[in-house]
Image 1 (cartoon, rainbow, N blue to C red):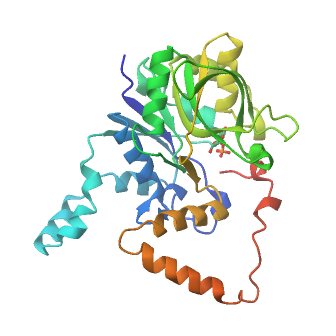
Image 2 (image 1 turned 90 degrees about the vertical axis):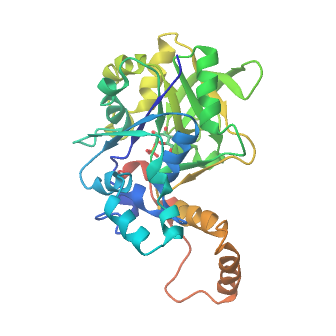
Length: 317
Ligand code: G1P
């Protein structure tokens, strides 16, 4: 049966991005011209899905407003004949049905996903983390290939992976990869571990925030005990599926495909720069401005990022 639904968790507090996220969701931070979450929604729509559930939280109403068709704003732009600006609102006409539910307590990503049980009605669904942009290299996209691999393999779950530097495994769910599956970038997963130490990590293949799962995930989530950070982890529920002998597969992202994370300032700044430099109207001028800036001596009081000194998994996202 075709996969048509996506679940997008956006309930995290975004404390690593304070003060920018004090009164707005991190998923609404702009990356180039669009808020992060719009990239995620467009990715879901382009993969051919038709329905989407946001798992939101308090102070996330801006997301709901962003995807609501604003008839008043449209009328004002039409009256002023601002067709260029109207075109910027074309995303409102996406062929996607939106649903919202709230995670009232921050009990972890796995807990957030468990709230989607009524919505998915016993069917497989996509999980796309709302704070990561996946840049595909042409068509079909990473997400489309992931859905296809899940359906072809008759898997219980399929997960997209990106290879990360050895030092960075501590920030991600990491796979223990098994044999390759015929005809593609897919492989069997033997094990999964959430945010391992560099010594524990079985590989450098990091969960890239895109999954397709069957409804059996809900039973696994009910059996999942609090893990890393005292939270119910989706990675741990997926490992329970493996323990049950269910087929769980991975899909490697291809060269040129990238995940842009906005979970902390260093990666947010980089993501913004990447998309702003690609802007057809302003990219070129920005490149020149950047070259000029980099010739200036650093301003006093400015220092290199201390990002790596922060133990990420001790902070709430
Ligand atoms: C979550 C998942 C982790 C995954 C990561 C990708 O972690 O738990 O397995 O690798 O997203 O972004 P978080 O970044 O929410 O701590």
